[in-house]
Length: 579
Ligand code: ATP
Ligand code: MG
Image (tube, rainbow, N blue to C red; front, side, top):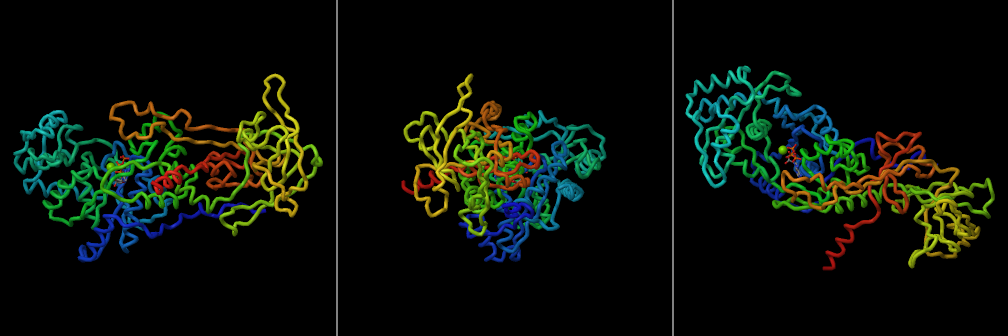
């Protein structure tokens, strides 16, 4: 018997390859830039997560895009942590982000950078701007600053501190840095234009006072650059050529350009694309954090979470996620992607690689009365009809078996061809059996056991097994099968589009109360006794399942249902083609 049917796909991260993908506008921009020999023919991108949460499938889109384009054009892609907000960031997140990117199949070599590595240089940039009369220390409180800022329809007002002399600004910034002032007492602001129609240009904050310990710089700093002041300059310092980001940064681009121009340093080209939105889930770290903190899920890696850690634990393959990211494409307009499409990509992949086994989730015992007591037959079963190289295995068959409760109906409705009193069904890889008698609990009336007979001339694969019946069901041998817990999952949210729920409203009210169902009395093929965490199987007729890591152990097996077999996306696509 095979030690383990799983091909060793989980031990080593697979390397991502660029398949023949349809082109998109960002690729076209790069091709054009290369033709013009812009940046001396270099392509250098980066993936810039803020370490304030785990990565989700939306980040995967950005990772595939940034690392994928770099690989395609013989360029480089940096991993840079935009860690400018110590109050929300943590090394736990840094570690998880690195693990998830590697799992997805990408590698940043030694190019692991942190915005915090540049704190000193950013500070020097700030001094340079002050000296050029382009930045000033402002004493307005956050509330006052909001009042001065104006609105989309009204211009803002100049801060009374805007014309502070350069020397005073330099002195105050130095004292801010030295820790002389409490949080929020002062800020450093860019001196741009309080009447700009773009609110980001109305003297934005560059530095704020925050007496907080940073996960990497410790207590060295008590002033921190804003994301807006750090991001563009970090890209510039790293020599990034194409700074790819999501659409919400389009309005920040003039500000980034302004800083780079004033400082007269390398100017990466920012290109915006639409972020991924997925039905029946949320893709915002803030909301995901809330789900974790309020224990609506068991953690960031809960198999219902749209995080890469969650998908991994659920049994998703990196290949399926990468393939999905290719297929959704890259566009300029925000849209919502059906989660069924992601599941479709997963099925396509698992269909090829997951070995088939039999498991019974809700067991009903059957006794084959004309099968000799104590006899055991080893029946040959195909491991994967999609891949003959995966071979066959032997499955024990005996007098007492379990079948699925729902494969029996005492009073079969029209169209039900599986087992019912007096009727026959084929057992997969085995024989045709007939239900002779139904045994019930006299108190509850619940069916507890079926007495059946088998037809010895109908053994699967044998030359006499010509006789046909309308249905085939799966089963396990009662004496050989092993117990397991199986966790079935459904969408985390009942509502399809959570993006249209306004801020401040009760989005948590849409949580699916039935997103997890735990079945404890399941029975699986004895071969699975050796199944290891992360391995994936198809349970025939039931779906794809993976061994849960960390909850599963050899003495108590736990499986997650990765995905069902019913492919709603294939049907949607078919309909689309017909229309
Ligand atoms: P969130 O909204 O979940 O907090 P974020 O943009 O704040 O996400 P970052 O850590 O800043 O999270 O994101 C790192 C990179 O991933 C950024 O370049 C960002 O544009 C990109 N990204 C984040 N969410 C998505 C998404 N849904 N689709 C595509 N790219 C995304
Ligand atoms: Mg962000």
